[in-house]
Image (cartoon, protein in one colour):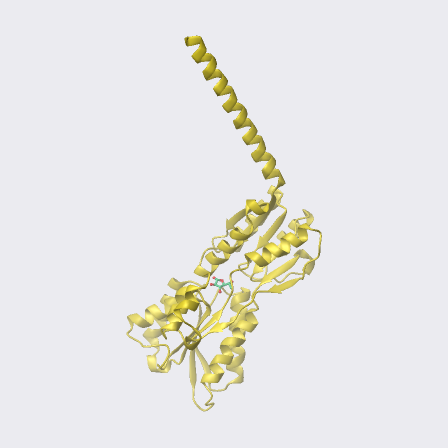
Length: 330
Ligand code: GYE
């Protein structure tokens, strides 16, 4: 009788072993068939950045035949360069790079090119000696975003005799987003003699840094000297508003201080709807589908456009509702 149980146990064990081997072999085979995409993000500094990461992860799934390898550069270009080198060593099929700043990529992109790995630039752009170092760019037209903000301010401040004092919290210096949004403001200040930038500092696209900068400014500048707080993303706007709240300073619609911000994340749109933020310039992080379209087109051996701008707009209080905000994806 005991012998029967031993024989039964051995046969079950053998069967399970075969299934396990078969599963492992199938997993390896399946992995071998997947297109591997290395995805280098500069960090996770903002709600916007997390939305971009999620959008790319949703686009490149195993069900669609992809394996996505995500790397967070922890806000350092050196880390991103290391991440790209790791992707090259791993022999990925494509690299998606969201560059923290525009310059300093030639060497590592030469290495990717030498390895025959197409690189797609996403979100912010790069400036390289040879445009063949990357296959395509998907992202925002930051110059247009800045121009939207300036057009709004020019419609508000029509009296050229009245001084307009602006506090300017910049994003990461040297990033395309910062350069486009800063250049628009600085060009407008040159064109309007009555517009003055009375404070300009880099908030690194973070709430904490912007809050500290604003607090220091408010220790030196009287509230009635401020007309506009121009923040280059929503995290910075949240930080600046937190410091103005602490100082008991009113801002937003129907006050003397306008807040202008970029990204149009849901939390910021709520503050636009309630009048705390006067203008939200949209910066669309839902770039996964655009990237998927590019890589799946390349997979078929077809050419892709060098530049693809994502669709973007802007919002003011009267353009928003709870339903509009609830219907947005980030
Ligand atoms: O505005 C900000 C993020 O590169 C457009 O980076 C992106 C910017 C975005 O930290 O929230």
